[in-house]
Length: 114
Image 1 (cartoon, rainbow, N blue to C red):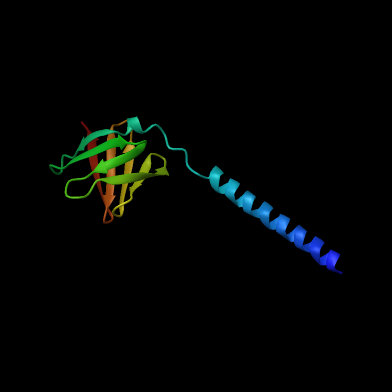
Image 2: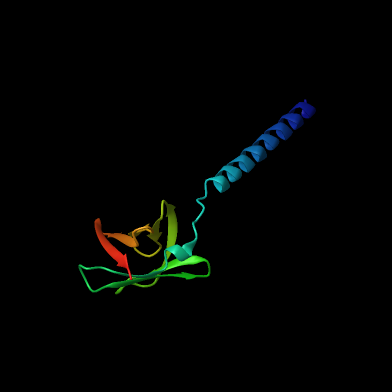
């Protein structure tokens, strides 16, 4: 009887470990590959206001400085879109047309790369 419980314990432990490894592998595979950050860096200006947005690379991370806000690290969301780690701000780059759209408080503002 003890042998049966012991074997059952071994089987359950092995199944649990396999499930954990499968979950870790799946999480690693779903991590988005960040494109080269240099294509996003630069200064961006808007015709609608005098704000200059600075986007730069620091220690392999994309950073953004918006006037009146602290410098923020940007997290890649896919399709050339990022979100700020500080505020509820989203950034979407259009590399071909050299534009940056920033969403803040449900309002989009377009900036052109200088």
